Length: 412
Image (cartoon, rainbow, N blue to C red):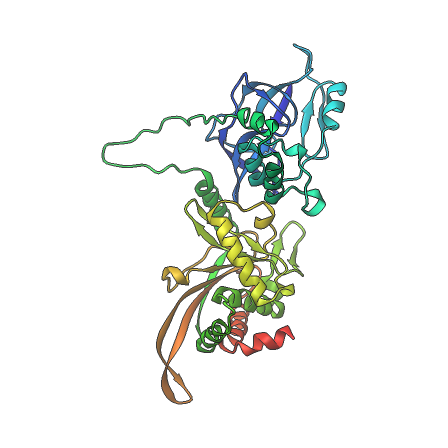
């Protein structure tokens, strides 16, 4: 009997919530067919079937949170003898866990390993396409969304496509246990991404002694530069300037681009600047990551931010999009915020929130003028840094944002 277990699907996850199954006992399943949808602390992912066979038992009910290594489904692999005793577990290089006779394992091992994101697999599945028949054009042969669409175009009008669409997998959703509701209340399910966010926040607050430092920035010149660029045909968001300015300030104060390794008794300063973007969606907060910001222009950063925001709202972010952040920012200004005490994205050292920009009177050269003023809130790990260092960091950030020409000098 083959055991399908929850395995680590990204960034050292330790647990996940079972959202729903695509199969039920008695169903015939094929290798790479999605079996179950799992919610981790950052994303929703599908676990594929490791071999052809028949679903014998669903072990864990939907709505249950389980640890990595927990058996979720039992499958009688195709060709396995009925009533055969349990065989040693064999784990393949593509993270498939196989139980069964060596002969069956060798048959499975010969199957092609397909590299594709969960959303790409979903496109193929919903259109009745066998993803193993597609040649990937992405890195390391990864199959992209466009690869699937091109393959579908090549099958357009053929009998093969018609048959595939007719035989595509039927998804079923098992209902969670009923919830008691009183007459004087309504209930909102506390599960999925919201539940995982809650666990992450509790972990951060109970582990990291948070201190929040507030600062006021005058960004009149930055607003002028943004306007000039727009008039020149180059639309660049303020957020892109914020990301680049943060990266440059982190170079001067690397203790905030780090994490505390208590086991080894060291603070690990990261040499890459991967900036996480706290993004609000209908399902809750999610943090896509712009990698290697130090190698990217402000315009490139703007384009990536725009793409990530779209993918986040459409729930199309891949595991790679969400991994590896070294510092996180939250641009809540467009929502109207004037201040906050952000919770650090554990295990990072700090998080910076940008708030609403307002026009108001300021004093310049002894005269009262109208300027653009914005508040920032910086929460940091007091085990790793002190308040004076945090103030120095935001002062350096202010230099870049209040005098945006310095950003250009640093890029030369």
